Length: 248
Image (cartoon, rainbow, N blue to C red; front, top):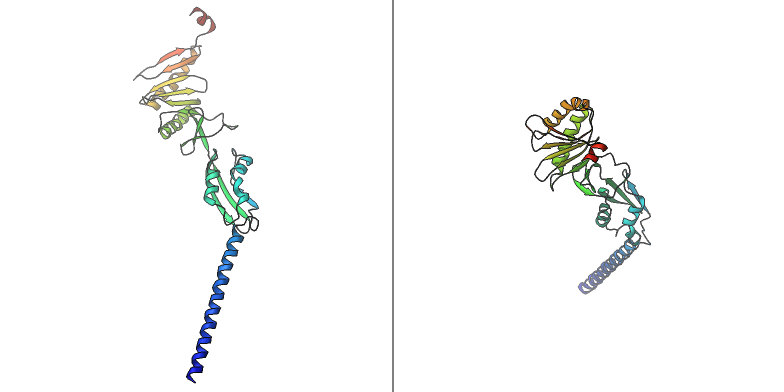
């Protein structure tokens, strides 16, 4: 009796172990199949890229070129970080978010740089006063020209905002603002007149020019440069006419 029970237990144990072994084999094979399926671009290809966000300066072809590796990836194996970095390297792109969407789509949200000024001629300042490099695009000619030493972009942009507001209140428009290595300011108006403002009392000196502008206009000659680097008063340089240039 005892022997029969022992044999029955042994058979039950072997059957249980065999079943467990078969289950484990099935899980492994299923995992391998699922991995192969997920990593095969033919099985789960990325068939659509949903590109979100307003774009003014980044062309569709630039985005396609940046995503040329997509055809070699499946939805699961696509390196989201690499895709984000590739798009972020585009010159007019500020930041990028990439998400997978079942069954065959990537959603890309792209935010472009918002230029507020030219910086040192060939570069730009964005709306956070951060310098960046990007190709010229149409419609940006009216942005102010700003210059300054390395690390001075925020200071120059803030001064430009204050100066341009003061000018606008009095019927003037600025064209460019420069900060020299000695921290002296020069402002050029849209009519070409250069204002030397020095290193202190910048807004007060701009106001001094505004106050004397009506009197300067009555002279009838064309202003070239106004030096306001004095505690009181100013020095004026007039443009030479053709006869004066020939005599000179």
